[in-house]
Image (cartoon, rainbow, N blue to C red):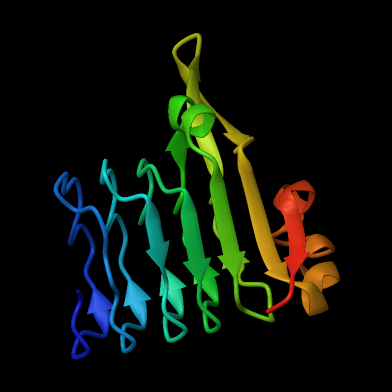
Length: 160
């Protein structure tokens, strides 16, 4: 449990913590820093509370998440925040539930996987992923040409 007095989870706070199996983030957290949960091999789901406004770059990268719930106040997702390896993409299905009625700003390749192609790192949209957004704003997400267009084929509506 990340306590109720905490408002910021610092960069690298839980980086490479193999023992972390679950995390409860306190309701007063506003910011999750860069690389904060990077490469946590046993973390399979995370709920981002409604008060969190920003998630830093690579925050949950290379973590085998299967379920992510993003809170209502999220306005910014940093680049590569949920990046994974091609093997993780193949082996784990990811369900992302977005509770925000307004599409957040996405950094580059938030929901991609990386792979090597002739020694060069390449990126592709995660294939085993569905992003659920509130049905009432589904078209806002699927038509957002600035940030969400990359994932428009992965987005489905749900009743909030």
